[in-house]
Image (tube, rainbow, N blue to C red; front, top):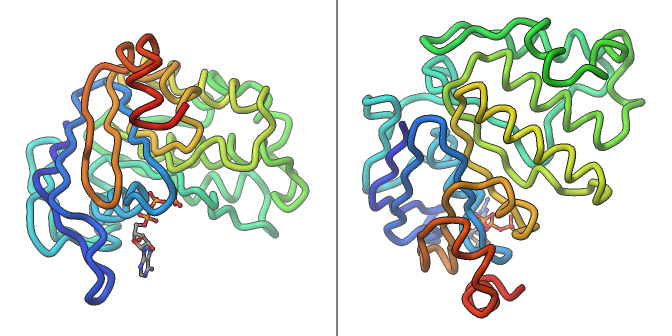
Length: 231
Ligand code: ATP
């Protein structure tokens, strides 16, 4: 579904990615882990066309998207949940969600489908987003991505700023998306939580992929996990 092949991405003259390659298969949950500054967000920005790579190739759903504009990438079926969530605080939940509605070649999501995943959302629709809790904001951000009818969702640090119990709820949602046939690429600092819901994992350090394998291996092999991600 997503094939990121050997990309090199720069900010001005500063190189952030040194030939990273990542694959996400249809309906698969993949985690991208690594310390601060490893290049995880830059990888997502490269996929989304926000910081296109100087070399290498990115394809999605069989099409080359390496230099495709961001709004076209969204219409092709890649949903994005940014780490800062990018919700309009003065607008209601309903208005924020309307902004995300799109049709793609993948399953179309409407608001009732989203209520099927987040039942609590129904009672928040008329609330202004500035009054929501962090967990509720995250629910709105994921729902907005779902209304874009994605085949793949990129989740950037979904646990950021959330209480541990809410982190569990958010990550359980990932499994529900998978059950709906949506592939998910999660960038996380909270590696243990991400590993619980992932099929495969990549570990990055200083702009390079230093490990690739089944998530189960890192869940069960503590010495390897300590070596790679320090926990
Ligand atoms: P974090 O978990 O802290 O967000 P990350 O793994 O997502 O880290 P990136 O944000 O992708 O890492 O950063 C990768 C490298 O690119 C870092 O060295 C960072 O300083 C640099 N970088 C990121 N954004 C910019 C920018 N806008 N301008 C210049 N350099 C940047």
